[in-house]
Image 1 (tube, rainbow, N blue to C red):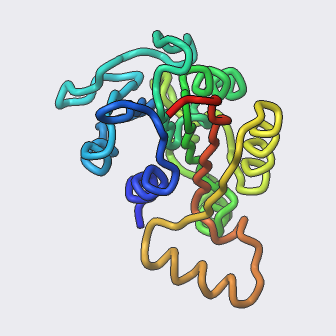
Image 2 (tube, helix red, strand yellow):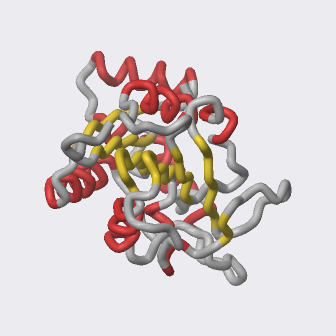
Length: 211
């Protein structure tokens, strides 16, 4: 199951109870709007990104670090897949995403503690090209080395501080990754070595009387 299928599954599992034809979903850091085909039948999709994509279908082109031009609690779902690690102020970014969320905030953070990245760094001295320090890299690059244990602790504390119900799902995107993860589970290897990323579903408390 890829990350977009996982988000669709989360939307089904954690439906929002509001009287709308379709709940609204804001995809922050949408890139090519790859999530849209997976959820278009379930939500009214709006995409935000730093750049317009070649198809010209990003609804809002802006730097999330400067804030979002939406009112408080204006989307039933806010989704940010592999976005937070790109932000200088990740705590401010999380608070801004939560501000425009009416129901659920869905995040994905990659695990750079995965054995693949450890081996890549050991053999080649680099985690991935997203962390390379090169002239002309521009604004869109990773700022943080995110590892499973630290990410899980970060989002747990964020949820606790904001009175949110948290569900965490460790996942892998390919058959090879899943096979490796299964073998690691059997012999008791830490998930920090075999989980490719974490998906977090953070639900705001339901307001009394809201359907």
